[in-house]
Structure formats: structure tokens, C-alpha cells
Image 1 (cartoon, rainbow, N blue to C red):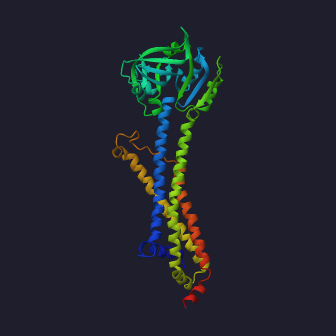
Image 2 (cartoon, rainbow, N blue to C red):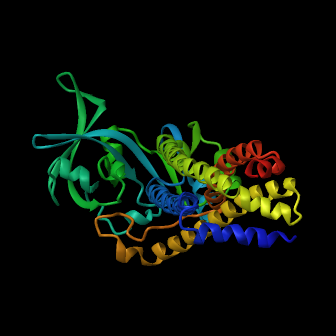
Length: 389
């Protein structure tokens, strides 16, 4: 007897029976939604995380060359290598300071940029006659355009009637809004000369590199001899806490999804046990027509596997189509209070595999439990026929 008529017969049970397979039908729908939702969640979350990382790299750079102390030596050999390789960069003198405006005080990270280098893209149109300040930081200390603010360096002092921290007074010449709270609430930029005057330290202490920097270029840069020791930090090292939290977010999302999928697994187990108990007489009909009992039992399990795989694949396909629609029409759906109105989608091969394997794996495990129970309870159709007689 052919196998596909057997499968078609039981597919019709799920779709047409009025009372027998409602629970199993609910389980199938739940399996479809599991694959669909996992595909959509991973695609959107991956896109949002990718957008956050891209914005952070556009501000802080993808790599950072740090000198152990400010150096005034010529960095022309390093800069020549970067210019030759087409790497965007700028050198800076960075320090942590306190800002004081009237009665308001706030900590900040001050970047003194060497304007002889190429300005990063996010600072191209900014006015460096004074300070370029994160918008949230300016709001904290109630600063407006051209207001004066004291910049205090607690680690550098003047011996005037005791140890007094050095400070300079500058005006706010421009705002910066990056959509990154840690930048908008904490960082400011200015001319490197002003920071050198504040710290009484000529030179710079960092070089920020932007874009994709090949490993061989980094090796060349680090191999250039300098009077002050230098070290390299990648973006991942600079933002270890952020990288760790993004990985944790992904793992927690998967854990919660798997936990919720167990509810679908319970429906699968219950539905299959009811399904198997109801089709025993139908299986005996196939047995009477000449199919071996072992083959019948095996086909029942294969039927559940095919049903699960087909449902998961269809759910994944619908999820992928939904992601493409959201990517195209997300701007019309999302209100303007959201940073990512376009709902960027980042879906790689591993995401697709996980979206299919996790629901199917859960279904496989719990389907086997139901099948094992059915096989144990129906070891002989002869005994069942005798009991009916």
C-alpha cells in the first residue's frame, strides 16, 4: 500500500473532523506561531541591535589607539599609514571633567579634537569656536547657545593659596544629538588647544579609527615606534558592558521563548495522545488491508514529524515575509517617538536555523513521548480485535 494515501487520510482528520482533532489543530497553530514569532523577534531585535552598534561606532570609532600618557611627539608616521590605507581617523586629548553653570554641576567626558585631522562625520557641521555639547548634558545644567560654562579638571591643580583645581571658561557654541543616551548625557567636544591649556599637557593621548580597519593595518600602526607606550582597543573592548548586555538580551529572549513554547508542547502531547487513541480502529483497517503493524506505527510517527516540519517551515516563511513588509512599510507604522522608525531587519543564516530548529526540536521531543506511550499501549492489534469481539 502507498504511504501518501495514509498521510492524506490523517491530514484530513485534522482539517475536517469536528470533534476528534481540535486540540491537535490548536497545537499545530501554536507551532506555526512559534516559528513565525521567533523569526520576527530575531529579525527585529537583530536589526535594532545592529543599528545601536552602528551608531555607537560612528561616534566612538571602531578602534582606539591609546597612549599611556599625553604625547607631544610627531604622529606623522602613524597618520601617513592611515591616510594611505583610506582609514578615517582623528587624534584627541580626552579627559574627565566637571561642568559648572550657575548652581548646576555635572560630570562630563571632554574630547579635545585636533582640527588639523579629518573631522568625523557626526561633527562635520559643528561650530568649534566654543564647546559642542550633548543635548541632554546641556539640559542638565540649563545651558543655552552662547552661555558660559566652567570646565573644571579635578586631577590638575594650581598652587594658589592652596591646591585649587584648574578650570577654564568656555561658551556653548553647538549642540549634538546622537540618539545614544551615554553620549548625549555625558560627552563634549572642543579644540585640542583648549584642553591642553586646561590640563597643562601638550599633545594628544588617543587616536580614534573609524570604519573597517584590516588587521594588517592595525599591526603596521602598532609597530610604529613611539616615545610613549601605546595599546589598542577594539569597539567590543571599549564597550564590553554593552556587548555583554546585548548578548544577555538575546539569550533571555530565547529562554523566554522556549519557556513559552513548552505550553505548545503540552498541547502537542495531549493532542497526539488523544489522536492516537482515536485512530486505533483506523489503523487496524490499514492492518487488515495488508500493512504491517510495525510499519503502521512507524508511519504514525513519521506523520507527526512531517506535520511538525511542514508547520514550522510555513511559519518561518510567513515570518520572513512579515519582516520584509515591516522593513519596507515600518516608517508608516511606527510613530516618530521611536528612534528606529524604519524597523531595520538583521536576519542571518543562524537566525533562520534557530527559528526552525527550536520549535521543531521541542515538537520532536514531546511528539516522541506521545508516540512511545502509544506504541507501548498498542503492541498487538490482534489483542485489540479480540477485545472488541
